Amino acid sequence: MKLLHLLPLCAALLLAACGPSESELRTELRQINAELVAIQVAANQHRSQMSQAEFDAFFGSFAAGYGATSGDYGLAGDGISTATNAVRQYDHSASSLDHLQRRWRTLGRRRAHIIADLN
Image (cartoon, rainbow, N blue to C red; front, side, top):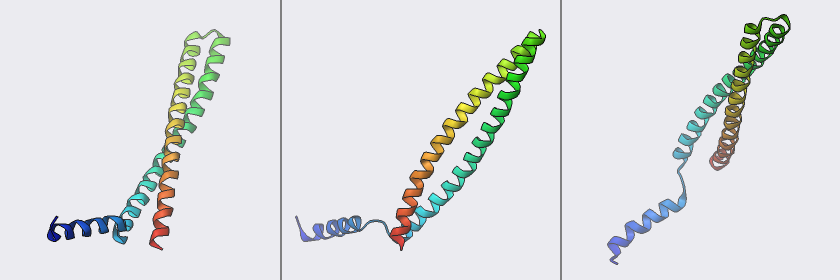
């Protein structure tokens, strides 16, 4: 191989071995911070949905019980429907919240690593 072809290849390999530059790390840190904020907002929405689902499940089960004891089977059916939908909503929100928490931890570890590299 000619020296002329070998020099650019060596330079490229050396740059690749050095890792990301400080500006690239700062850019990645800004992106991580933005995603952490978005995760926080989404997590708060899922917590709110879970709270609403608990409320709906309580009153749905109350309506189902009252409807069944009073003979109002339409109310009982509506209460059961409300309670089961609330349980599904709660489970979905809890699963989404768990996923967001795992992503938060992953980004937090990467963020700590970048900060350590910058210092």
